[in-house]
Length: 306
Picture 1 (tube, rainbow, N blue to C red):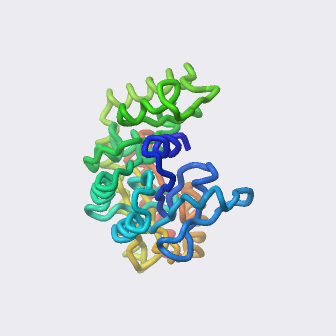
Picture 2: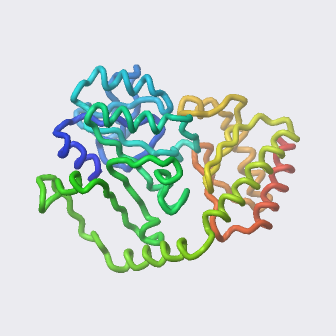
């Protein structure tokens, strides 16, 4: 919410582009679902949100560069910025196509708009520098979530100095919070980040993720069950569909009844997955090779029942 307010204040423009399936918090202007066409403004996705609050939010399909170009062409000098999960994890998990994030970076720079990375999920998870380190792209603003407080409730945003200087008390954009800089959350966050820096956490998670991915693919293939398994680092999701999943529309084609059977089958095996087809899975440094092996063996047994 604050990052978008800042983007609007800095650019002196009103419109924001977000992508279908990406979640950026429950601020009114962001609880928006796509309109009937690619260039129509979004409509409220929750009761209690006036349509007027969402008229400046444009919702586009993820991984579609042409849709972004068309939106800028239709709203010349009106778009303050693009907000995006660099690896969307709120409709399961799908990955940016080769060159897609680079295209967003180029389009925003060309049009005088800001690029905002929502790294609430990916920040400090995919790498110490988040998705922007993994993809080698520097956004104008970044948003982070509970990881920076070691799991305690906190959020943060930051970016280019000239943009951040627009915040009060230096600039005209208002931002405040009762718990801003809460010392307990900050101490916990520093401890968590120091631990990540002192260990081989990311290498371990990448290795475990690769083993899990290969094992789950093998289980599905052996059972003859169509599954699209998307993984990036320690984030993963399996969709029960024969078609590749690159955005929300693709994800919605998956077989949710089959996922339901899979979830309960895995639960009976002692493996507790997120109870929704549209939730990403996460590996932790607490997981061991034995945990992954147990999960794969369970998947082999459960897949055969689907």
